[in-house]
Amino acid sequence: MDKVDAIMSIENVTKSFGGIKAVNNVSFYIKKGEIKALIGPNGAGKTTLFNVITKLYSKDKGKVFFLGKDMENYKPYELIGLGISRTFQNIQLIDEMTVIENVMLGYHSKTKANVADAFFHLPKNIKAENEAKERAFESLKFLKIEDTANKYPHEIPFGYKRLVEMARALCVQPDMLLLDEPAAGLNESETNRLLKTIFRIWEQNVSILLIEHDMNLVMNCSHSIVAMDEGKKIAEGPPSYIQNNEDVLKAYFGK
Ligand SMILES: Nc1ncnc2c1ncn2[C@@H]1O[C@H](COP(=O)(O)OP(=O)(O)O)[C@@H](O)[C@H]1O
Ligand SMILES: [Mg+2]
Image (spheres, rainbow, N blue to C red):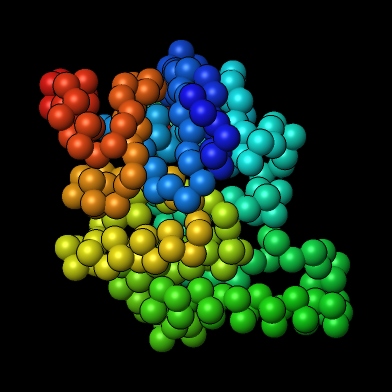
């Protein structure tokens, strides 16, 4: 395995819940500038692997390296500073905040202003606030949903909510973006739009790791695919290989 051009490498990662090995000795790497998909039936361990990578869960075993740095040494809130950003399978928008405020939340974890600064509204904080607002609006514009900036989440369609989450993940200008089922709940035209959006993000030199069930989307946008089943990696390769792989077909249809 030539890791020279890897942005992230995942090595022998294992994570158990009680007796269940949700992720079982999984290894693969994501090349710089690559769109990599992570597929597998429900319960395969995809989201758990994301949660291990983004330090929401501690792992039992294994290593994750980002640009050669051992992620063991970083706290969850330090990931954005490192250049890693993600969205969630279950949309996490705050209903009491406007769309742009929700997007700004992504940026706040990057600005250095501390809680006391925020509370007393020191000038330093106002500057950070304006910067965050500008970046958030740019992200909304990039995703072509800037019209929704001052609306509340309940006032916008479901498909837009996913884009707002994506704007939040993008406003910190990550080097690597992790998307957990971005097409879930989208209709066909929204999914087509998502495909174009993923390519536009990728064109900004963002490496992407994508969990997705929509096979059309996966096969059309990824350079390489890792398939998981019952915690294990069962196959890895380009779409044309994965499409005809017996273990993958068995994982999806054989049970
Ligand atoms: N926080 C948790 N506590 C206990 N079990 C969990 C937890 N998260 C995931 N699991 C279990 O781990 C396995 C993999 O789940 P998950 O990673 O969500 O799969 P996927 O995203 O591929 O559908 C499942 O058996 C699931 O029930
Ligand atoms: Mg999942």
